[in-house]
Length: 138
Image: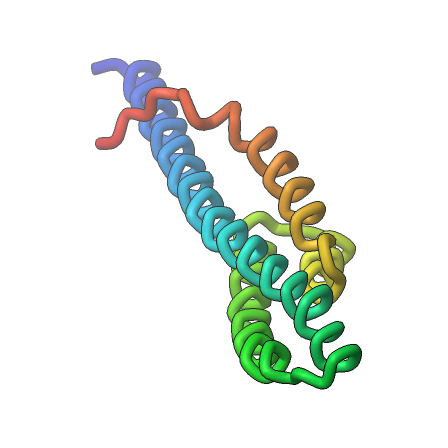
């Protein structure tokens, strides 16, 4: 084989390897995004129940049972949500502003749903170009 053919074959292997690495990274981000989305909906729903059902029952009617049950569950799930958000932020290389929005989303009712939609739309637009590409693994 000629030297030019050897260089071309090496370049093909390098491109294939980088494409495979990029595909693995996209799949990793996709999995982290799914974990984040599940936790965002779970924490958002729990917070809405806590704020709009539990708090009025506790302070308006003197029945603290919903807050006593949902409060600690929301607190634990918020920690899990933070771990999922930080994992996604690390894999997708988010800015500090994006990370701050994700962290704050678990503290304000309805914000988790808005931020989740924004993050998902942003990431899926970036990953769309890599999803259908054929990759040759050697």
